[in-house]
Image (tube, rainbow, N blue to C red; front, top):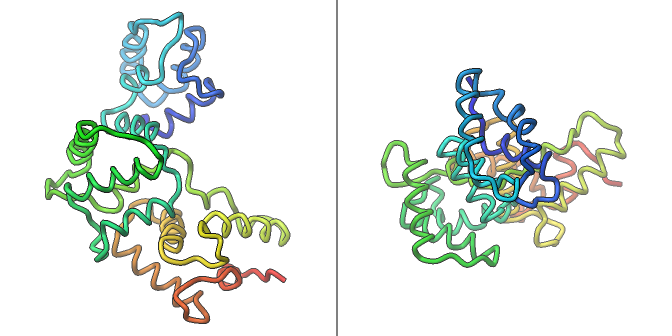
Length: 259
């Protein structure tokens, strides 16, 4: 039986709370539950429905955090709340911070490094976090994700804290549209990853692009696989061997002629 996850919960929630007020009206509760509880099975679904109905109502409204705490497993609830606090949805930004802590490309960071990693995420979003809250996030993440208890997290674990927006590349179907549409989509793709606006992908911009490409075919990320794919992409696309992927070079790799 499938579990309701953070992404599915938010997708349903946004249908009822399109303005992101953080609550839904009590009159919408039955419709909301009908959708979210379909993965729970009849008996478990009724038990959960009863738990929700026992929630204390505030002016006939139900808060998103209250419903998430009841409907989501512990791991998914943590991810959901963390993503709302720090809505990181940019793979380039994520990989830039990751490389700062995994400079030797081991594919892992330690618990001590995790605290700095999370601190940088908050700073990047101009959010303040108390030392106590930062310690709480660090301990909780290690408890949830460090399943073999070796005191470190890998790239796949950390990538899960990215916001609930879908992989950017999933928006495009390069082989299912006209040439003009493909060129238009390519321009959007390149602009998204060319954060520095230099006309070339380099450093974490390449990392972010490779990470998203890998996720399309391999849900579980591995640091060494990422490095191998990055090396392969550069070998194939970096025609002038300057360590960057120029716009026209990436277009050629994707079978496009821009002019």
